[in-house]
Every structure is written in structure tokens, then in C-alpha cells.
Image (cartoon, rainbow, N blue to C red; front, side):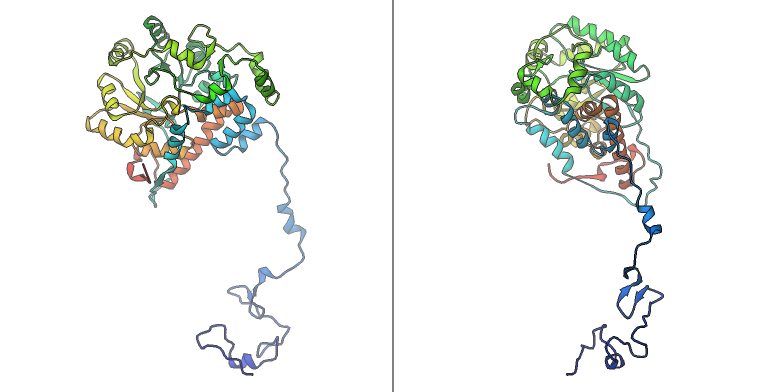
Length: 456
């Protein structure tokens, strides 16, 4: 039988090869292989020389047999954490349910929080290539001072409840990183103690205006005396949001020892040991309070606040004044007209009004409006940030600065001060990598052209 090949088939043997005995190429003995010097292929067998089997040699195996010594303990676990989500997983394992849920949860069905995080996922970065990104500068000016990174630590209440080092860990980590730290009115360390713990840090103070103006004035004066250069007044807490996880957990301040909490403690003995062997949990800026979080907010915060109160604050406070909780373009413009040096686009981390506007979505409109007004007010953004790439996206769309709350607290719960340091390390690496891949070497060079919103 004659075997034929289509003329265009490059694998077809020549006429002389077809006539050679099986296993032998014409003009060459059957047991002689030919290795192409250009490709390293055995042309007789069709295999690269590297694919021919041979017995392994110890010299080849030795470099591969370098077994790492197992590492255990909190420090090793923190080093292995690559994302903020990794730190969250660690925090959940180490922290009782009530304080973890207080941090992790949001209002009602938690729709706002999910949307805020999703907003950062629903973007497309638009990188530039052939740019020199051998050196990247993440530093930026914010409210009259320099920050080594374009992110600061947001005010969080009851922080020593999450982990016993609390505000001390946060302020000292911020000091070491060269970024601002914001102490909450609802903090569990005093203004003076935080200033003493981080004397070289840039400390800001967050204020809730109370119905008792004299007590508010006292806090303002203490903040100024302690060297705080910025006052951040929060305006989105006329009443408490419906934080249903807290309700279901029976969350109280301080945490109550019930049968449920005792059982929960059996799985987190380190948290309870730290909690019970340190100074009792109190609000450092307030008198002692016992009750639920919602009851405290509803009894203390003032639902009658108006722009006239902002005018009073502007006259009283001589440093930089920032208004936190802005959720519309109109309110952004109005608070700037009333003397604010900056605004924080924030829906309180989704913890107040569920289905509230998403700060990241609002950002381009607010940025355009303030530019049209020729305003130099700082635009700061929080809510939903879980990576350095989120921060870079916010800066590109018009934010001057960002704040992290939950991301910082996950690190705190995962490992105290070392966990907060790890949070900031992860975010910094994320930012450096994202900037380099975008082809941008300075924060000031980020523009809306670097980000496209896939949906809004």
C-alpha cells in the first residue's frame, strides 16, 4: 500500500526517508540520534534533549532540599498575612463575637457597607507604560502638614474593647508610619494619654457635639492644649443607626459576662486574659457609662445641630476644622462656605443610614463642585477601603487623603500594635505596586484618567 501526504504537510517525509527501514533515517544508522545544535531537539526521536529521562543526581537535588524551619506564634502569622482580609480572618479567630461584630458589622441589612466595598471593585485601572517608576513617592500634604502616606487612621470608639492596646497601639503605629491618627470622643484613652504615648505623632481629635456645650468646649480646649492641630466634627449621628448585630449580641459597654460570653471566652482566652488584667474599659473623654451603645448615643448626641453650630465651632477652634459625614454635593459646598478647611466624604462606615450614598461614587461630583467654586478645602474619603489599590483609586478620582477604620481595627484585633503596623505595611506595599503598574511616581500625578468606573 502506498502512503501519500498532502504536499503542504511539513511533516511529510522525503521520498528517500520513506524508503528507509523502520527506525532508520536514510543515510544514518538506526541507533544514531542527531541533536540539532540550534534547538537541542533529538531530530530522530522528536524530543528535546532536556526531556530525555535520566537518573537524578544529588547535585541537582541539593538546591531544592532547603526545608524552612516551621514558624509559629503571632509574629509569624502576621508576617504571613498578605491582605487586610487575612488580618480580618485572624481577628475573627482571636476576638469574642460581640466586639468583633461591633467592628465588622454595619446598620440594618448592611447594604451600604457591601456597596461601598463593591464600588472599589467595580473600577478599571488605566495604566500608562514606558514611565520611569524606579522611585515612587507616596507622601502628600494634608491640612497644613506632611503625611508619609496618603492615608490616616480614622476615629473609632471603644477601641480597647477590640484589643487591650487600643488607641495606644493605633497612635504609636501612626507615629512610626508618619501619618495622622484621629482619636474619637468615644475613645478609651484620653486626649492627654494619647499625646504622651505618641509625642512625635500628628494627632487629630474627633468631636461629637453634645447637648451640653460646656462639655464640648472643655474637650476642644483639652485637644488644643495637647497639641492636636485638627478638629474633626462628626455630623451624621443625630440618632444611632440600627446596628442589628450589636442588638442580637446584647452588646453593652463594658461587655457583660453572661453565659454566652463565658462560652465564647473559652475559645479566646488571650482576649479575656488581656481584658481582665488591664485597666477597666471606660470612655476617657466621658464619665462612666453603663448601657447599650445605642442608648449612649441617643442620650448624649444632639439632634438639634445646625450650620449655626458649625459657625460656633469655627469661631472656637483655631486649628484646622474638618467636617465628617458629608453625603451630598450641596452639604459639601455649604460646610466649606461655613468655614470648614476640609470634608470627609463618609457614611460612617455604613453604620448609620443603610442604603446611604457611597462616598467613592460621590467623590467625582464633589471634587468637580469644589473646583468650580475655586475652593482649596481638603477632600478626605473613608468607608469601604480594604486595600492600597482602593486608596490609589480614591486619590485618582479626586480625594486628597483617605482614612481607614475597620482595616486598622482588624490589624489591632489580629495582633495589637504589631497588627496595626502590619496593616500599614500591607497598604503601603499595595500602593507602591499599584502606582508602579499605573506608571505614576507621585501622588500628585494621579488623575481621573487613571480610573474608569465600570458601573455606578
